[in-house]
Each structure stands twice: as C-alpha cells, then as structure tokens.
Amino acid sequence: MISVFKNKEDCCGCTACYSVCPTKAISMKGDEEGFLYPEIDSSLCIDCQLCKKVCPIINNKKLKN
Ligand code: SF4
Ligand code: SF4
Image (cartoon, rainbow, N blue to C red):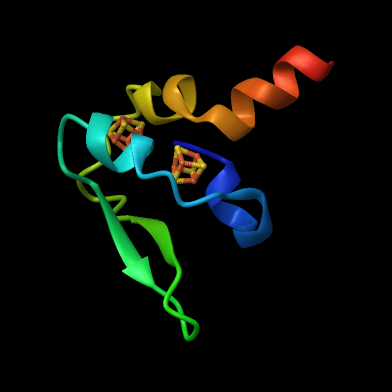
C-alpha cells in the first residue's frame, strides 16, 4: 500500500493512484480546505503496489536519491 498517504503534505492530489487502483480501494476525499487527498479502504486493497508505482511524488523522491 502506498506510503505517501500517511503525510498529507507529501501528496499533490493528482489522483493518479485513485485512477490506477484496480480494486477501487482508493477514494479522493476533500479536507477542510477543499483539497482532495486519497483514502484507502484496506479491506479492498490487494497490495498490488500500482499506486506506489504511479505516484509522481514517490518516484520523484527515488530519482533524487
Ligand atoms: S496497492 Fe493496489 S489495490 Fe492497494 S490501494 Fe494501491 S493500487 Fe489499490
Ligand atoms: S499518486 Fe501520489 S501524489 Fe497523486 S494523489 Fe496519489 S498519493 Fe497523492
């Protein structure tokens, strides 16, 4: 399961993870300011890691390292 979800400030809300998830385990929820962030229903997650592979923030960090 994608780890960037733990830190809201690390997510740009691009919805790529939401779009790629094959089991619809991810939904985009608005915060108090109206910005959308992903939320995972772990009962639907099959741990395929696609959300992690598609996330531009996680993959950008990998490039910097
Ligand atoms: S690991 Fe796969 S099933 Fe789980 S939330 Fe990410 S894309 Fe969806
Ligand atoms: S793919 Fe990454 S940056 Fe985009 S909404 Fe999902 S967690 Fe946030």
